[in-house]
Length: 312
Image (cartoon, rainbow, N blue to C red; front, side, top):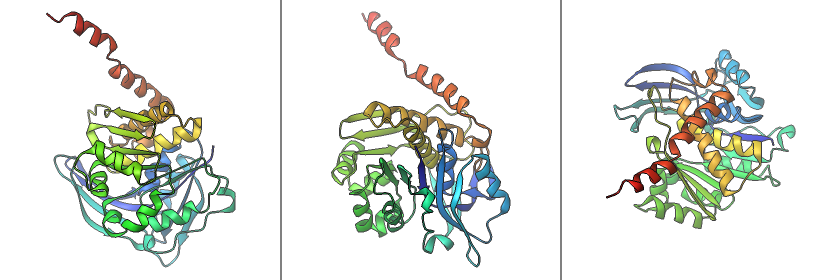
């Protein structure tokens, strides 16, 4: 089923303990769309400036991402972000951010995109997320991402958005900030009271948890041998998750759990290189192979039986 996403399309400069990447392709919309493309067609709605390099478009073409909703604006500048990761790569510091074209009106949704049934509102201003959502009254599923900036500065608009989406994806610190709780379980329960049917809380190297009105799923992260750049990990996680849901249409708790696993796999590849360099080398078969390895790691039934038999 058609999947559409809106969010930031940017030029990033990233500093990590493993190295530096200057002026590379980034943005929440980009990472999401690349990850979702492993499962089926994905369309983007977003804007860039006249400084957006032509060779970045080749990356979109590699992933066969629909670009009829991408607007290149003469006289405007592309969103830019510069960040630094500490030795503990769960800790990220924003050094510089220029909203540029993100501070302008977002592009209209092309008529040929209005049949999109699965909608993801990647991280951007909640007013822009609501505006895009209005274009899809017959959607099957709509989910959104957010960040601390909007929780702090746009809480009323964000709360209005949460009444209208089916799911929310955010990290652990953002969940605690949004709900003013100190426990993630209580935070998840509080978010469900705000409107969504489910919430996914990302916990970095500690995995992710899904809280749904009908149950819960908790998964660890895939053990990473080489972490080069965590930028976009959360967005590629959401892309893998929504891509699977759009491809299968399985919105049961079990289906959501499987989508969580696929999101974990796409994120695990994403962190192995700067920008989208690693995802460009990956196929759907690679995701499935890693998922098989991951499932084997989680199969603890025999281990439990053996341990219980050895108790004295």
